[in-house]
Length: 114
Length: 112
Image 1 (cartoon, rainbow over the protein chains, first blue to last red):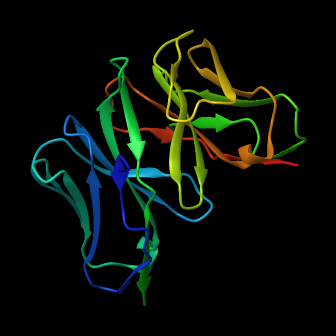
Image 2: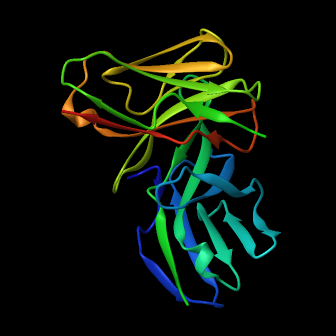
């Protein structure tokens, strides 16, 4: 089982709709959860992070965390063509050496159709 | 402005060569990371460092080594390049316990 799993997509949504991106993780001891956006040919950039169960909102973005179900999601409201990108879920855990490490999922490609 | 700079954007090397990928950050971050990114496999951690002269293996360290002699610089070394090391290599840095990792622009390495 992969440590962090995402559906590779592509996920296609019409402009103005809500895009829902999902991620599951295997390590129950995971502490912190991140969503990065990566445009084609560019490096990833952080858009959201969440540490506690529940929802966290920032503008059009909402991150949701359910530690019991080991599930984290990203909602994008009023999707715009400029949101078309690959979204990477990342999870921070403690490795066997006692150091924190961040593991990324393979990413979900989002296409917003004008 | 936050900056992580990788020495090369594109690199072509021959099989068996020793390859150095350099990464410099100007944010005084403690943590630095090297990832490779391949289609369908996502970002995979090769090595990371939490302090000068300190290194930890990531998930795929085989065939690689690293060096961190100064806080701002983290080098990835391919001891003897092989074609299966053809990939996009991304360096990142973050504050200790910080939420955000800042990425460099990436180095696309081709081993022929």
